[in-house]
Image 1 (cartoon, rainbow, N blue to C red):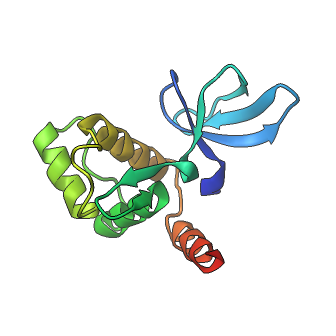
Image 2 (image 1 turned 90 degrees about the vertical axis):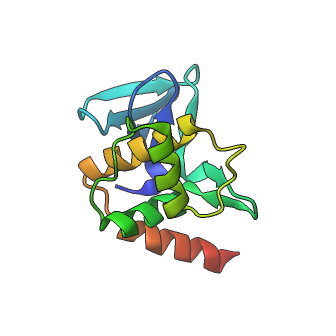
Image 3 (image 1 turned 90 degrees about the horizontal axis):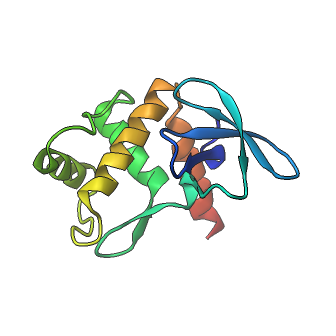
Length: 140
């Protein structure tokens, strides 16, 4: 499973892995239940590798945030995304010190933690993120 093929579809729960492309869109597999379905141009889709989190210095790619959580949790599940807002924000401050508290809302933190836990349950290898982040830094 490649991080570059993981998407979030607005209006649909969970994360999806892109399996193949069609004329009208893409075929994806849910990381929650393994069901396959078509995603067309009418769906609003976000590639996880294109998402970044605001910090006071620069925007940090979501993959790097996941890597930080994986290092903190030893590649195991993080806290529940249903914890209190105070607990979530203090946890997020540990994994991403200096995140912009005015522009990163609790709902964003919930989604990041929920996505991370979905990836852990799906057996995602976070060490591959280390390699992808390193190779993208070398290209710059």
